[in-house]
Length: 177
Image (tube, one colour):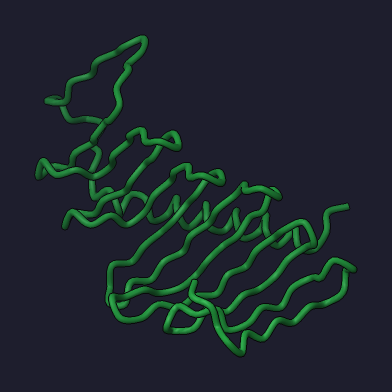
């Protein structure tokens, strides 16, 4: 039987995928017309490249697929040239993020993998002066919630300790995120 934490992770991942599917067309800003007689279709058996840019009607990048030192990277770019989302690999595994470029910038970031097969979701905001977030994570002990204050300092964590009980960590001397 699936544990409550696993159910919550699956529900959160499913919800974020649904939201991404709803928001992706607006990030790309590209209208598709199947009856457009001027469009050209090319078929290839294989295409190999290090970077592929899909442009919008104004000729600006709307979606970029490229490689980096960790593997693949897909960036979603709005009509103003601002990166609003990404799917990529990092040193710990897969990463997914949605950004809102309003000030302060809102962000949702998900990461999977890591040394202990951890997963976390960070929801927060960030500006040049301040940042803060709520981090939901799953690790070898179970799950935890970490609070990061407006100065980017860890403020406290509720989690599961090694014995299976609730652990509350109050960082009276906060550490930088």
